[in-house]
Image 1 (tube, one colour):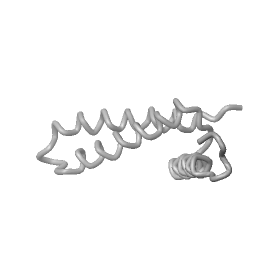
Image 2: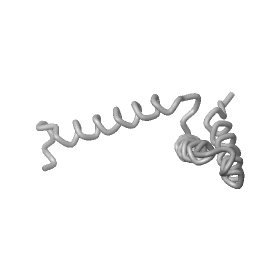
Image 3: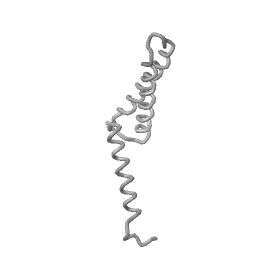
Image 4: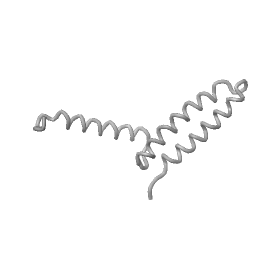
Length: 87
């Protein structure tokens, strides 16, 4: 079964973002809290939406970051390989 963890987190953070924007109406009573919640929810939504669209299953954001860095390191290593006779 395919895990939809990133999709669920992206959708819930989008809802929290919308609620935080709506809470800005009560700025006098809540202070900076809605703005901070909106910023965190927005970036969480962006990160998990990209994870879901790229097909990452059942991974957290840090694991996704590590996987991307490993792929970049492998590509760099292959590009600088002195045994490559194509250059």
